[in-house]
Amino acid sequence: MAASSAKPYCCSSLNPAPSNAIARRAALSALPAAKPRRFSHGLAAVAANPRASRSAVLRPVRACLAAPRRPEYVPDRIDDPNYVRIFDTTLRDGEQSPGATMTSAEKLVVARQLARLGVDIIEAGFPASSPDDLDAVRSIAIEVGNTPVGEDGHVPVICGLSRCNKRDIDAAWEAVRHARKPRIHTFIATSEIHMQHKLRKTPDQVVAIAREMVAYARSLGCPDVEFSPEDAGRSNREFLYHILEEVIKAGATTLNIPDTVGYTLPHEFGKLIADIKANTPGIENAIISTHCQNDLGLASANTLAGAYAGARQLEVTINGIGERAGNASLEEVVMAIKCRRELLGGLYTGINSQHITMTSKMVQEHSGLHVQPHKAIVGANAFAHESGIHQDGMLKFKGTYEIISPDDIGLTRANEFGIVLGKLSGRHAVRTKLVELGYEINDKEFEDFFKRYKEVAEKKKRVTDEDIEALLSDEIFQPKVIWSLGDVQATCGTLGLSTATVKLITIDGEEKIGCSVGTGPVDAAYKAVDQIIQIPTVLREYSMTSVTEGIDAIATTRVVIAGDVSADKPALTSNSNRSFSGSGAAMDVVVSSVRAYLSALNKMSSYVGAVKASSEAPETISVQTTE
Image (cartoon, rainbow, N blue to C red; front, side):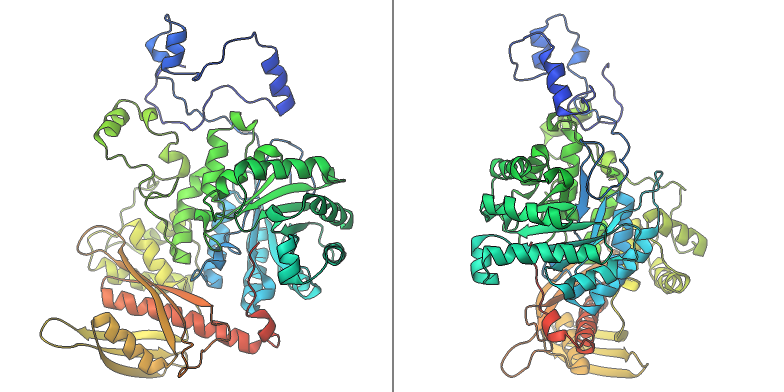
């Protein structure tokens, strides 16, 4: 292949990988012996062959191998040994990030986008944790779990998490049974430290519980049951082999091996997967999976090591969000497999990588967790080149400093219809833009959004895609409205105290007004809101960003609040560790800030209402998982 200025690619070789590792080794053994070379392309190739033309130096080293079609889904086997299932747990483990609570509407939108992305399994939540989570998982199972997407008509598996007890499993089955391909995921701890100090059970008791609960899940009619030995990374190997053998006999179709505390190194985790594959009786009747936490920054590396050692399902989250330091990042794992497929034995996934950027932005917007600029693949600086040396190389040939094309992850969004939105744009143009951006809303939601859009369009010459997404999140994907913003007026400056007057509207349409002073206009406005709502809270985080450039940019505010547990103010929630995020968008920074605060307060109020309505509230509201 001659030098080309065409779009850069993302793999290290143009040669297709053999269908399996054995064939690959056989093909290599048939080649004549040669001295090992440090490099197989570029300048080293020219040095080895002085007659080689200069074009050899410029051959793109990133050409992607065309992956085969996704094999038909069968719970306990994969017909193509090189295919790797992607299990996305953004809506379950990812949502356990402090302050990342999403509304049911937001979860449904993210689930639709995950289906477009092509993930094989969506872990939609933990149904037993709250009535609201059960309803959200059920909605995803009904809509996303029965709607084909893409050219191949892909329908993802919808999964619900449960502890190893009948109540949890019943809740999970009630939520996911409406999907075309339902799955129950149940877990119990297997490390000595967890069994002794957390469960206070003997190893034999743990095995008996796991075996009984997997069998119970299958008895409900669920054909697809995943089992996880929590903290497998620190569990005794022989005990792991034994409990995995027993749950396979009981009907487990997938065995997930979690590095729950992010303790292992890549070579250790790879050996753990290889040992389980080699020493667990009946392992040929189940799929081995990985679930790696990022406490030492090794989650993606451990996940790839597990895949290379034989795991054929990888549990990941968008942007790597999750408990503590997060999880293995979907975009990192998927693009590493796509880029280095030949060195990973020909592995491939069913992910449509061109949806990665859109999915990353959507999760950032709805979770309120923004990625750092230098985040791999999806960070703002991932494809930015400021150094003069780098810029010179990029201008001459993109392959000098880019191993992945931005186009491959959908970073460059082309406007298919040539639409530029402004104040004269009508409903059809705006709705077309929403569809182009991947959002589906009903007529009433669209009318509410269109009103906000017109307010902004009157003040801005051009409304960008980023403006649209910010407004959509602020207007549509909000929690149940208990308090809505009527008006806000604030004064500030160097000549006196900052003051604010806020009018809020209750769910019944009653208007209430509060006035206060503060150290600044936002502080004064928040105190005015507190006067009206009278919910004791603590503001844990407050941040504001500009959606686009320019003095007329929309401001997006994110806040995280929690119940105030000080002695003189009883906490509103019985789970004092629970925090709630809220986001708001407006061209006025004070209005944006108040909208974000109200969003978080509405989430908190809805949560408390759901807990009070549940007869099992004391048991369910404090559920936390660290798988």
